[in-house]
Length: 396
Image 1 (cartoon, helix red, strand yellow):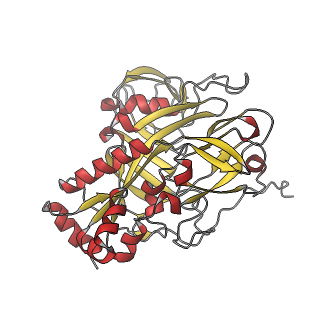
Image 2 (cartoon, rainbow, N blue to C red; image 1 turned 90 degrees about the vertical axis):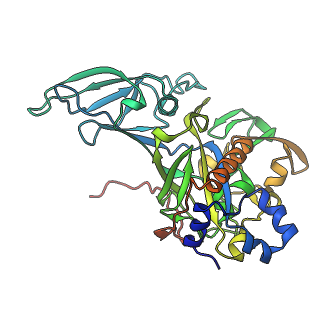
Image 3 (tube, one colour; image 1 turned 135 degrees about the horizontal axis):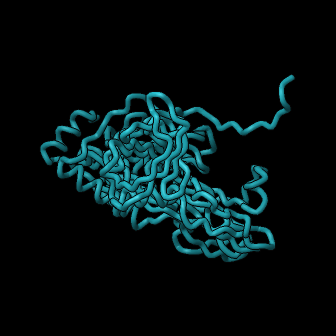
């Protein structure tokens, strides 16, 4: 057994043994579980892909005269200003003002909140336009100015739902092309899409949330961030394989971090035709090897992780609960799967290459002593299901 304190002391002295979740598989095969658990201190996991439930709080400081901003637009993208005088919240999926959306289907969705976030992290200039009703202590009623992230007091990324533990494989069983957040799906199941790093993904390496919890330190697009809560729609009570790995979405993480410390390579606005805007984000999570069982879970292989195959033309939008089948990530990563006697080509919305680069960068930071682990303040819930929205009549 090891402790967080012991592992952090080894990190500080440059003696920690750190491997990525890809490297640890062969390492345990060669060394054996018992010997490897004694030697290895940390396994780094990572993912990179669209994470719609993302956004940021920005503080502009006060103009002269002061203004209580009640409406705000950043590069013409509406930001929520129902908080303090010069704080706003910008959501990643917010569309630019007057974007035609899907009025001319399929819409292009060329610019939105995620693209503003990308510009800010990249150090580019963004326009602020604000309006106010005016008060005695905040008399200014209108402002237009340009700023960069360095002009802000704070730029804090606050993401209610990131790092889905597992996710759907999307297909289209209908006779027409459809546009979804998992990309364009051709009719008659001619293609399939998925979004996960599989064996590198953080919560697939800690399927029972033994080390990842509230307060866990994470690598959030290059910044040191942390888990501030369970993610929205966190639903760990689900069907799982004998190894504890969920066969469906299951857990999620709510993450926060300082945008001023982020690397623009891992913060990218995404336009999804016919659907909307999203933010592709890179996240790395270190798994401390406290015992053999935790190490064993980090040796999960793509062939041992399955995801549900879902029809996005009917079953997903109508919430029927029907699953066409289960597909392993090993099969998905070959670029094609076989289902019901047909070969279906497969593409990924996520990037395994970028996820691996993140895992390597986090490994290097820990080895250099630049990234210490943080013991969770509280565990993530292990028994919890997700409620649906009931449509009810107005109470009398």
